[in-house]
Length: 559
Image (tube, rainbow, N blue to C red; front, top):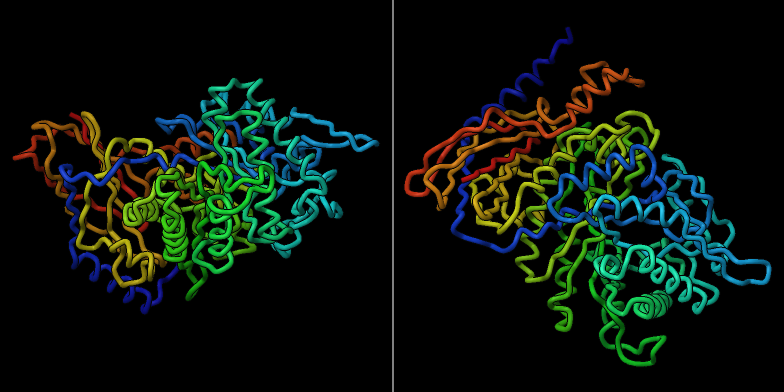
């Protein structure tokens, strides 16, 4: 048995004393509504579109669709990229557009249809990304397909697909034919419920043109979408973090173009903009041999993006989609080559997701914007090593703990209500300086609907270190019933955690069928105890619960 150094014992002891000595309290007031519980969490995305219709991809999409009470939106890169459809990390292709020897367009929707059929068959909706540049249209097509693997320089992925078109009218016709084909295949009503968008992070090397060339491409794309379906919704620009000068300036220029500048196609002022999109990422690092997250970096991007959109009066009510909203920026960079990403397999990812989504809603309230969705850029990577540390929701068909947070969100409906706690960090504190005090963020997000309510709890800290569990006294006020049934669910090292189960098995590289069955079971959302019927007093109920560090709990009430 490994001996624990005396110094570490002292550290652990002081951790226990510091937490057990402070009782955490949370007060939920179901009488104080904050706003709708917009299902902003029900949006997901990934780089590799060809995973969509593969074995584990279809399985995961089915699970995501099942957990949500509303249609889930899915965003994928490379829907117009040239290639034979063979998937690879940070790569995908559909071969939708090629040209014959005389330069005449040839359209082939076979692979695109396989992708969208998979979504539509599960009741999901595309956040249909118009991109990237087909090889036959690129102004600099060679080299075209990259062969990046984790550990190699990231900038090697930026090849011929990043360039503007050599013919904007051919590009526009491609977009027109795609939307027209979609209406013919899925019906006008269905396609009207989609969101169309142009490109990804055009302020970065994903786009080898200028900001004005992007605006020109957007005008041609928006015009083509609307010619094919006048009631279609289109938006953009999906810039990188708006708190940075590059992303922020690009976003402002684009929004000014859409609202005040001359349209490159029509010659009139303005261009259609049905939603605004930008990205927001955190920034983990290794500190003293452990992972330290940085939620503040992500929230500053969100806050700045909301502020920029709100500064345009014409866009006051325009929906905002955070097109990628994640703890960091590279889903395909595993923890072997990027050790700061070691948070992804366990409960750190779960608690970060719970605590950060609550702040997204709060920042939207603060800036009084129409917050529609936040895309979690995490899916699955087909036929990769078990628990390799990708930013994904499942590994080899087995759900990871983070997916259970979204199962919890799926049980939260109606109106958001007020939650106060003596150890819950104020949203602006998290935005400005993250969660770095000696005490954790013990907080909650609560909702109320007809005949039901729900409270999500978390015990989160940016530093992924051993710490004592927290005892939380929860007070529920203004419950509109004398009798309620209370059920609890939990994500921690002992519940809803396939990763811990896999480690207990000895971290097998090739689990047996029996082990896989056991892992699949461990990956589901687990109840915490049995449901209880309780009586309220003057509309109030108080109970205590213990929540481990980086744990997430859900309490549901039915009456």
